[in-house]
Each structure stands twice: as structure tokens, then as C-alpha cells.
Image (tube, rainbow, N blue to C red):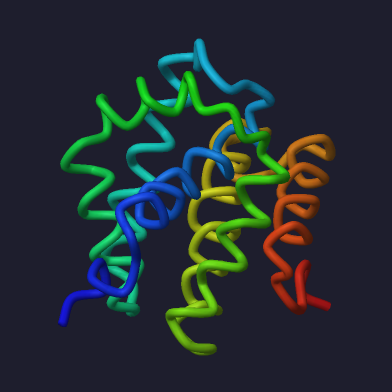
Length: 149
């Protein structure tokens, strides 16, 4: 059974929007993304597909395969970043503890921090504002131990 079968089509769409909400939290926009920011976002998605975790691989591959259409749908998504990430956290209970933790870490470390670092000084350091945005999003996902001590 694939990971997608655990979820209704609406739940899967919510999970597909999770990287977009993380990206939006960092860049401070729901639409009209700077093309350079969006390009970095796509590179972060591609890199995150290589990590372990069946759910994140299957989900990210589905996002990358349909990213332009999903981006258009996301532009009209009525849920705020906070509501969306909170719902993602709730849905991840279906995946089990380890899989859910890997998915949340991917969103925060690979997508959130990846985009934030690319936007920051020398392309390696997060600005204070972006770091706060990533930390807030991590809190909405109930990600434990972020930032690492």
C-alpha cells in the first residue's frame, strides 16, 4: 500500500500544500513569489526527495510532478499558514511517529531552512527574520527540539 492510500484526496492535498505553507512562511507571501525564491524552493523539494521516509518521498514526488498546477491552486487556498500547518500536524498522526517526525523535520530543515539560507547572507546564513519565521512554523507543526540546543 502506498502512503497516498492512507489519506483522502482532500487530506493528501493538504499534505501537498505543506511545503508551500513552509515556503510562504519564510518568504512572507502566499502568491506572486519572487522567481528566484521559487527556484530555490523547487531545488529544496528535489533535494528532500533523496532523504529517507516513504511518505515524504511519495508526497514530494507528487508535488514536483505537478508543481505548477499546485502552485496555482495554492494561490487561491483560503487557509492561512498557521491553520494549514496545524492541520498538517494533525494529519501526520496517520503516518506513525517516526514517519511523521521525518516529514516535519523535512519541512523545517530541508524546505524552511533551505530557502531561508539561500535568501540569507552568502547563501548560507539565515536572516534573523527568516530564522524566526522558520521557528514559528516549526512550532505550528509541533516539531520537538527546534531549534536544536
